[in-house]
Image (cartoon, rainbow, N blue to C red; front, side):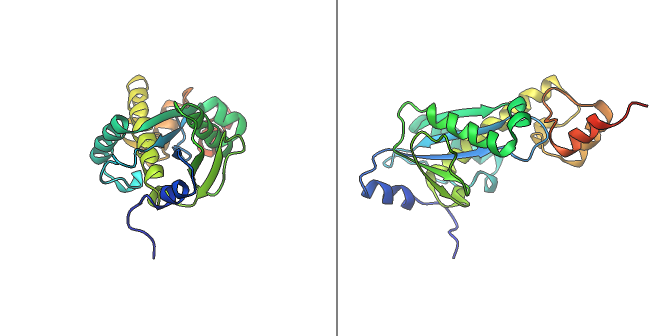
Length: 209
């Protein structure tokens, strides 16, 4: 039976083996047509874990923002990105891994173990890694990382929306909604769009009339 909420069992199992510093790592933004991919690495204090941690997709924006502030106040956090140019150059999977590695490297203390959401451990991970499928719903540390990454990227897209009105990034975060696709056809491609992604690539490949 799948857990309804993440717990601290993965972290506790590592600590019981003598591993003192465990980080949760997650990324957000693989699917959007615009904006960077954002990753976070979080080392929780086991004696001061915010209540209500969960997969960021299962939380309201208000709850995410509240937990974001709590996590930033009580945990060790690092946030990193891979740019649109990097996504187009090395592909979204590799760019996601790059952002996660940067997030781990940015922590004030290098963890001895990184619990990573997904199937793969990025090759350049600077410590031992453990991949956990759907980890943001299983591990509190990964859930915290998913909240930090999601809240950060959403805020970034709201800011970009002010400079590029019409695409609805403040509401769709760059994802390929019908309104975003319509705006892309009407307003064209910006420097924040991922040219290697199908709908954007198709727009750029259209012959001039």
